[in-house]
Image (cartoon, rainbow over all chains, first blue to last red; front, side, top):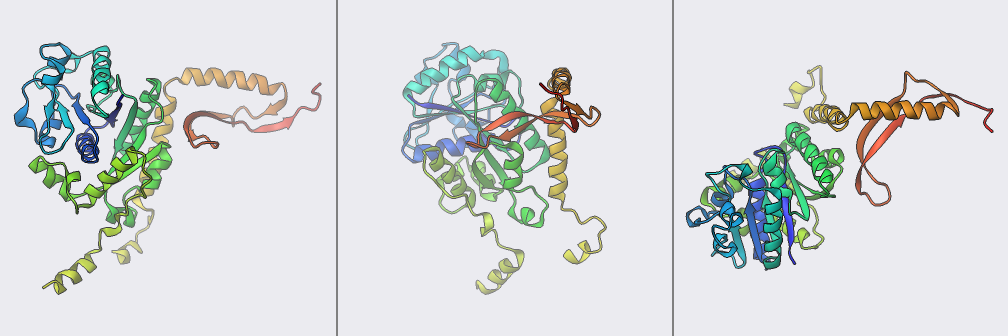
Length: 264
Length: 93
């Protein structure tokens, strides 16, 4: 019996979909059978972030309405053994699925897969309610900004009200240079305010933009710091104890300049 | 850059400003779910404590907050009451 995890945030644009794609891919690379589910009906995006947009035939609404069988709705990612995508519908709206149907779907998926990673839409309306309907656990994605942390706090309260206790936190897009200057809240500040367990931290990294451009989750790469960050998160999900990523690799301008001067 | 900062009147780091503003807004977010509920609790608590002590009703402050449980670090909602006691009654049987 697999485990269903919803990735949510309240606020949009903090990196839910990127986190879903990377956690899903990362867990598959580590040998698990994984399905990533896009519940953002009408604003489907997980397919392009995963680079699977050309392979869609059916979607989650087709599966729920039984227009197709579950197996037909799942898209197999040929690059990674054991990784599948269930895409959202693009031409319908959030009310096309009810929470009860979502629960049934997730329970079905739990029989087939080790991990069901559910990408939640922004907001706290029906789309959100659908996304959490079958979830055993929740991961909250936030960024070191007031608005994102505030919304995260709201969502934590809503999850608890819906019986999903002890959500875990992913702090995304940390800029270590700004943290050092005292111009960005640090990890400790945010954990202190939200008072939930920290699952991982992810630096603001150009490599994510580049990998998203190509439709290849960054976690599959070796070098980028963000790839290491997502790998660590996946290992923690699997129960391993992993130290928090050191974001200090980020060198100062001066040492970069020195390096540049002597690199020829 | 630090050279200019030295002359700035306000040398508070912007992240501290963010943290303070955030904390304040969350106190409202977390408690505005039911101000009436809090008011009712407040009234009842005053009534009960008054039997044992004289309290400063003006200085009384009750709010809903989230904190970590000391025993196992689990996050939980907590009702935090700050009740200034003026004098404990000594005629309690």
